[in-house]
Image (cartoon, rainbow, N blue to C red; front, side):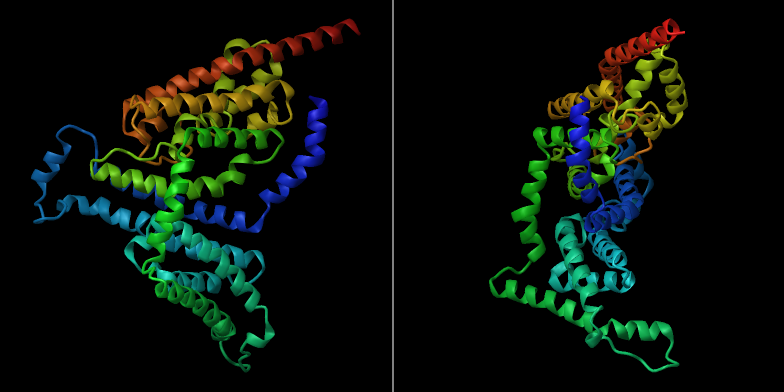
Amino acid sequence: MDKFIKWMDIHFIPVASKIGAQRHLIAIRDAFVVIMPLMILGALGTLVNNLPIPGFTNFMDGLFPKIVNEAPIWKSLGGGVWNASFGIMSLFIAFLVAHNVAKSYGKDGMAAGTVSVASFFALGGLQLAGMTSTGLFVALLVALISGELFQRLSGNKRLIINMPDGVPPAVAKAFASLFPAMIVVTIFAFINTLFQGFGVTDIIASFYKLVQEPFMGLANSYPSALLLAFIAPFLWFFGLHGANMIDPLMQTINAPAIAANVKALSEGKAIPFIVNKPFFDSFVNLGGTGATIGLIIAIFIVGRKNKPYKMISSLSAAPGIFNINEPMMFGLPIVLNPIMFVPFILTPMVLVTVAYVATATGIVPAATVMPPWVTPPIIGGILATKSMAGGVLAAVNVVISALIYAPFVILATKEVEKAEEEALDNK
């Protein structure tokens, strides 16, 4: 194990660290962090419109008048919330990602974000479907490309209009980005014209059917879920924030999947996507990456003689309930702890398997609501699936995680007792 850790220190960690610090991945991750509250709000708005409570819909229909041939008027509240969140998600991403890319170079982020949104519209994002999560992949590509183009062009002195002294700074700043903005938007408008010439009238819809939808289907498979369950704890074991590093990929999969699930729910159709962020938050990352709530429970049950473990687990219990496990990661520690390597990697993979099978077989409904990631285990399962079955599944997975960790806690406790005995013998 020591040789393995040494090899990883030399060959793996430097590469992984560079990937984690890659400016474009950080720009995407930080953009999704900003809109996370809106994504949660949009999912809750849909939940209100589709509460699985017997008689709720009939009661609300009787309380409020209906609009002829349209949805009941009381559903306009949830619908408005959805329109203000999932309905314009691609616009947020187009702006925020380009803004973050430009800022990482020390350039004007506001101008870059504005140009990115304009470029997105020039490419066809003005259609209603393009502004929702359906256009998310295209919005990401436009934001990354336009952000790079804008920051490079705005650094060209030949393209900068220098205003005379006395002109307000805001005006001078706007004119300084005039030519770079015109060039970038024109490029995307030209690309749209080319596609129109080849008969592609809706780039975003065509891209969704050709690339995004098949990718989401692939990411929805059990092998991909298993891979995602492996990567985050594997990176964490070596001190790298695995959840943050794979967050751009998770969010790219998650947002369209949640939107598709919400739409299917509102239309009374089968839920199409099992794997999404609430699936991991509610059934896999219980207590944090590696399902460390199970480790805390195992220490309280079979590791009480291990004084260091007991002290750290006592301090980590409160944040662990809210899925914050940095105290366990660095205090126990789990990072670079050879004894904890196997259960820390194995546990989330087992939990993914249990949760995936339970959902795929219909025992537990698929997740259609995205509770905040700090929602305690079991409660999160109930909220995400709008079903007590989700809470039962989360509880079962908590028990499974504790059972997996228990033998390794016993092993660690024996190692501590052995070290204490040797210390006494040496006195």
